[in-house]
Image (cartoon, rainbow, N blue to C red; front, side):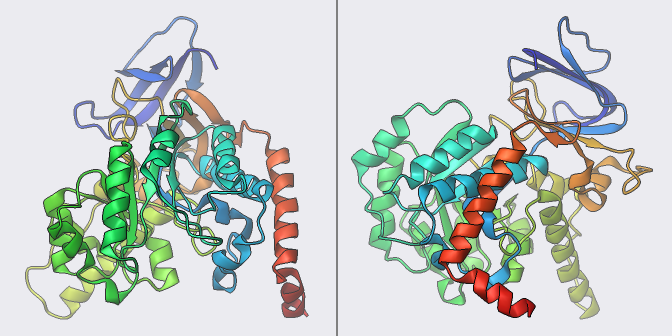
Length: 435
């Protein structure tokens, strides 16, 4: 596409309060950046996208995903990442990560926070980073402890060197903390200090086990929490923990479908809402969760509604307000960008932000007629409505199809899956189950 892209005549959900939402408007992107949102815009030499039967909105932000799990999508708990991981080569990891990221793009996701729990040695990090570059999305690459192989030794010089490498404007590095639920506070204290010295944001799993209650409060009392920390899952945090998150203005990323399927517990949505904490949403692992944000929005909304209706049925008074679709769509975009550390870059269609846009068809039978655009996105749409996806004004999905070499990515993933599954003994097991 050219340096100018004009998206014309769509229902524009800017999700920016200073811009507003518009029944019929245009979005102009120049040199990758949103420059105007309004009616009857003109732009010389612009590539034009007809959005007259579409909703135009910021691309979804996936605040937590293990992209390399994509080789075993929908395999369920029968497949352990730590077991299949040890049978991956760097080439397998490249194929898996690329497939995961392209699947995200096809679902209207423009930003992915990838928790890369892969070995530091053996070319795995380099392979994953190459997949990020080839997928064409905006990504946050989280350097995390490997799900298999030796524990990675963190050192300040190494983190600083990685942070200083120029990987282009679309990729950001962050540190994946040692697990707060299991590791000693001394380990976390040193890691977080090194990350901050290198200018890296910190992401941390927490709350997946009831034994973790009080851990976040303890970290908060030590002065370690801050706006540069994103806590993931948080399902078993107690009031002290949530109070500490709110006091420190730390961010939260929820993967509601995975958290309930995996048995982590219910995401603490109401506790977050009560404290003014607005989470981002993520997929987590496609092994046990759908790979799109439409499903995560519905899971979050349904969970909060069910919780409040249970309180009403029990005769409780002072029941909070129901979560609205206006809240949830912001979790999937604006708040997700904040949780990723990219709130000034993406998440809304405001002049000056990157042109990260999804165009969603409204003329399909699954959604027409549209009575409320935001309600339609949150409750009714799915990946079949995705028509265009732009990242920094570049089309990664056009007319409903990926612009990448899909055949190559699919073939690489198929070979990698076959080889990893065979090495892990999963193909024989599958055959016995079918018989």
